[in-house]
Image (cartoon, rainbow, N blue to C red; front, side, top):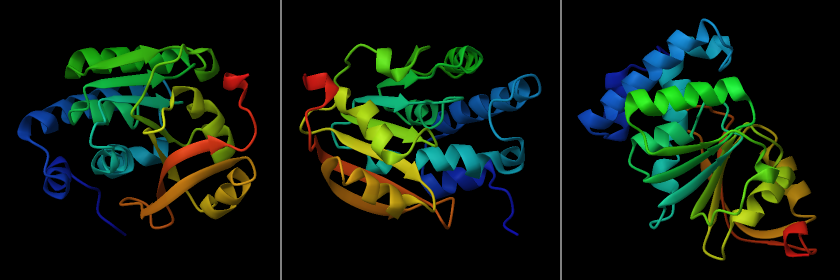
Length: 212
């Protein structure tokens, strides 16, 4: 069984600065504190929180577009991956989550850790159009639904980064019925059965509701 990842191990694996590590330590401490009262993340993930949530989120950072200033995190839950990417230096993170309690945690985490995050406590379908360089998501919805959510925020140069599990090939097949896109796959650094999808040049095969 793999030993839990430590903050020092995370820093060694990612090369983050001491300042960034300190922000992530504050975020993690607050997550563990709030989890006692609110079910923010799966309880069995807390024994290895630095791998399951911090590194799992941080692995997206080197995959972001070079101009990745504005990032939208769809269905962000307790703020992963968005809060972690903000701690790592993404200057304009928009976190979209309809669960009010999870948004309350995100606001407090952003305050305590000093993160540049705008938290939208609403469903993504109701969010005003925010031009984004990258749209990200973890464990929010199947790929066809994610693309439907993401498309209104995309420009021709935008990328999507989605963390996916064992069903990734099935989801890609389903998505291919309604979308064309360029697809790159990267093995997850935290889950042997996981994949990070990086999608670009995303276009619907039929008129999207956003274009009608």
